[in-house]
Amino acid sequence: MPKKTKRTTKTTQPSAKAKRTSRAKKNGAAGPKLEQLARSVVEMALRDEDPTVAIPTRALSNVRYNEKTRYVEMGGGKQSRSFFNFGQAKRFMQTLLVASKCKELAEMGKTASIRQIYYMCKHTIKGTNEKTFDDQSESDPIIEDLEVAVNALREELHVFASNRGNLVGPITLVDDGNTLDCAAMGSAGYPVPSIVEADVIQFKKCSAKFILHVEKDTVWRRFHEDRFWETHQCILSHGGGQPARGMRRLLRRMHEELNLPLFVLLDNDPWGYYIYSVIKHGSINLAYESRRMAVPDAKFIGVSAFDYDRCGLSDDVKLDLDASDIKRSKQILAYPWFKKKRAWAREIKKMISNGFKMEVEALISKDLSYLTEEYVPMKLKDKKQWLD
Image 1: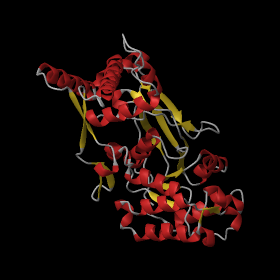
Image 2: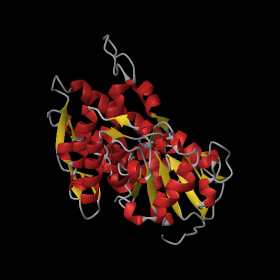
Image 3: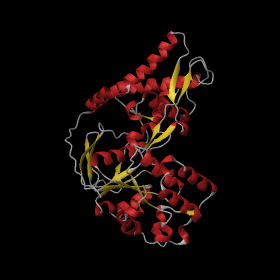
C-alpha cells in the first residue's frame, strides 16, 4: 500500500463579499463561453439563418472507452436545436433561458441549486397560456446540455445539486474559509457539498493511508461507530447509493492530490457493479466529466459473489435474482471496460450461476462487527481478492 502523504495548505478567511468577488472573477471560466453561445445565435438571426444551438449527444452511441486514460469519454456526435423547427423551438428557448440565468449567477458571484434554476426560469410567456417549463424534469437535462455545449462543468456555471454523502477520518480541510477537522465532527461526519473545487475546498493536512468508500449511509454508520477509520487510519466515505457529483469529484481530488488509494465496498448485485463502474471509469450520461471525476485506479474489494462460500454465509442472506437483474448484469459485462477483464467475467457469471445477490449488510449476519473487524481487514490484506 502506498505510503501516506501529508499535504499542508496555508489558508486565510476571506469575507463573504471577497468570496463573491472572487467567484465573479472566476466567471471567466464559463461567462465568455455563455456569451459566445448567445452571440452565435444572434449572428445567425442577423444573417437570416435559422438560429441553432449544437448540443453534443449524451448517449451510449456517442461514448467511447479510452484504454489509455481508462475512463469513458464523449464522442463528437452532436444534435441541432433550432428555433424555426416546430418540434425543437421550445427546447431551443429553454436552453437559452437557462444559459441566461447561469450568466446572471456568474456575474453576481452566486450559486443556485438545480431546483432554484427551475423556479428562476419558470414563468408564463406573455400573451399566451404557455409556460417556459412545466416541470423540473424539463430543466435539469438542459443544465447538462449546457455543460457539454459550452464545455464547462456545472460548478463553473454556478449551479449545484443537492448534497449527498459523508466522510470521516484523519483529514483537515478548509471549506469556504472554515477549517474543519473531519475526525472530530460527531456521529454524522463531514457532509460533502456539491461544489468541491479547489477555490471552495482545500486540503490542509492528511495522515490517512487510504480511502474506503461504501455504498450506503447505514453501512458507513457501522464502520464509523466501530471507529474503523481510526483503527486503520483511513478516510471513510459513503455516497448514499450512487455517489453524487460532489462526492465523486472529491474522491478523485483526494486520490490524485493526496496520493490515497481508493477501495470500494458495494452490494453484490448489478447496481453495486454499476456504481463501481461509475466511480472507476465515469458514467455514460456524464462522460464529458470523466476526466474530473473518474478514479481509474479504484479497487473493488467486495462484496463478491464468491464470498457466500468463502465466508461461510447462511441461506438467510440470499436475495433472488430476477430477469431484470440478469439482463442488467449481462449489459454491464458487455461494457468495453469490463469485457476484456477475466476476473470481472468470473465474478458476474458466478453471481448469475448462484441465482442470488447479496447486500453488504448480509455479512453482519455472522456478527455485528464482522464487516469492520474481520471481512474488510481480510480483503485489504489479500490483493488477490481485489477486482480492478
